[in-house]
Image (cartoon, rainbow over all chains, first blue to last red; front, side):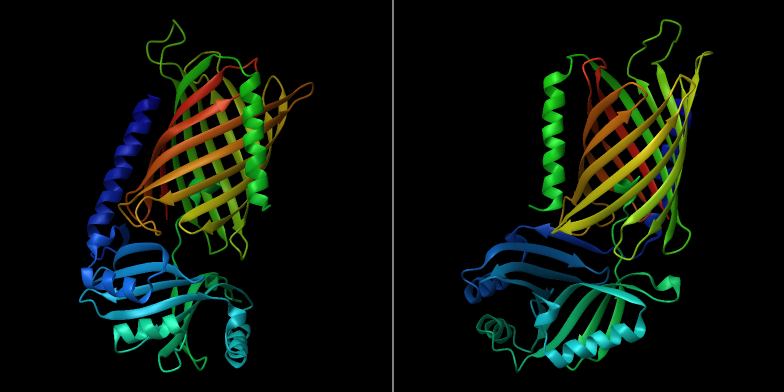
Length: 197
Length: 227
């Protein structure tokens, strides 16, 4: 009897979840791949600009509508993430930085924003984002740390809580170099039921 | 040395001590679990579970099917703090030997504190439990600590359709009127994120016990629904 109940529940939930999956039109994914799954031109370019890079990892990503490539590496102590469109054009380069390393006025402006908008907040990750029209020039500028001419933005991940309880959660905030908020997006984390209960 | 490394070292030292003391007998059992979790609000979550434990063989000549040792029904309510730590309270009702005329039961009250962090793609979780078991024969208090980690097997983010690996080690200290027993539970599982709300795991949990109690290997099959 007990086995029958378990079996029925397992089969039932499997079909239920399968039906839900089939309904999902967009399939987002991020997959770790070997270097040969990316265009040779991108690998050659990154190796040329960052010849001493370590811990290089390659990813295929899709937001459901379009595919992109991402290369993550460590170069002279810096953690970089280089993202390309499917046609090989540079999307952006992100560098993991510390919030206290941001320019002082920008630092204050961003902190003021969080103070005004939320009751409590914890900044969990800060990335400096670089963009430019020419892929090779952008990468070389980052390598030389001469990035003043590039378009710079800051992507900040934070856990926030507002007076409205619905606001509680992890979000990604994109700020311009002047400290103006450009966009926000909620970060959906893996469910923790299997490590909690 | 970080707290995580210290706690992991405690688990390993305890496991090796128990291994040296333990007997050689081993019980092989199947432990299926069905878990349902839903949010009441961003801070409050509830979880209900049904679990079973049965031998792979018939240990009782009066039974025709493999012996069913117990069935558990559990319910938990969790409160989430800003940093993601959770405080959980819960109740469990256990029916032992449910297919026997002389079946038993247990009521259990538990309180958890759990939190987690990330090391690249690894999610590392800590869970502390204090619980009280009420049984017709005796009552028992227990203190438990579990360190667990899971990692997607393709990339850093767990996507729908992707497999993941989960491993955990738990120390369980049982405190009775005239005894103190320590147990180490090590588990390793393979999980599959079947859809956004549903995942399944299959794996093994090895329970290393004191010399008086046989060690046990549980084949675990877990199904999680999370709305």
